[in-house]
Length: 118
Image (cartoon, rainbow, N blue to C red):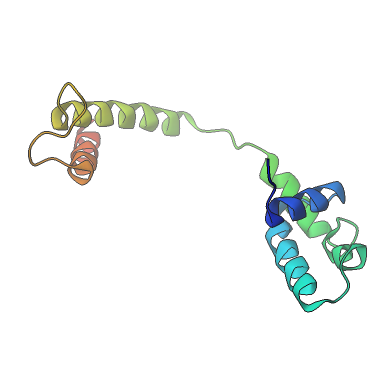
């Protein structure tokens, strides 16, 4: 299995403890430095480590936390699921194809109308 350049850079960054929202920027910097023939390695990665950029480390930790969903959100999701199921049953045949005059846009519009009424 071949590994592309971006995956290789991501593995290097992960090995050096660089994670979170700074990874795309670090990849861009590393590619530019590699293409220009400048220094490539730990001296470049220093700015992206948690020691030099604690805000990036905190943002990465915050991104891992899951926010608890409210009862209202869960109830809305259940209603939306029912609305989509009803709209799909109206707009599709038993074999899954669209009925005449129906497409995904029309099914979505119908689902949203049904959802308003629920």
